[in-house]
Image (cartoon, rainbow, N blue to C red):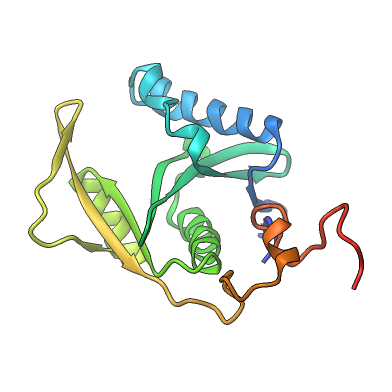
Length: 189
């Protein structure tokens, strides 16, 4: 898997990119500002927080225009999807499925079997129905902004080419998500 996936859909192509450049990270923050601060009325320090520098970010583009973003945080036994946001023009189940498949593939390639997210109950139903998540049993909801957020999880199949300690040293030097592409200064062979 490369860092980008083009999910061509006729004249409207949607492309997902693992953020590896500063301008892409700016696009992620712009999407969050639109979706969280403007659309949802959340404060800036919720939209962009201290976890952003320890996360992998994904940005979705329609042509060259950023339309969606999310981040993945990595823990010992699981990856956590957070800050999922799409501009109103791109909020539909098809785009959600495409984004999720890209993210699931990225997480599984890194060898993680379990992905977790938190959502308000009405959005949790979307994650369950469209993306196959299950609600964590016996775990109480957390409250943020006076709203309950429930924990959801999904098990992922691990691909044959998952990154492990058996992976070549060269692969471990390569850019996030571009594990099949030789690095700029990598010697051939």
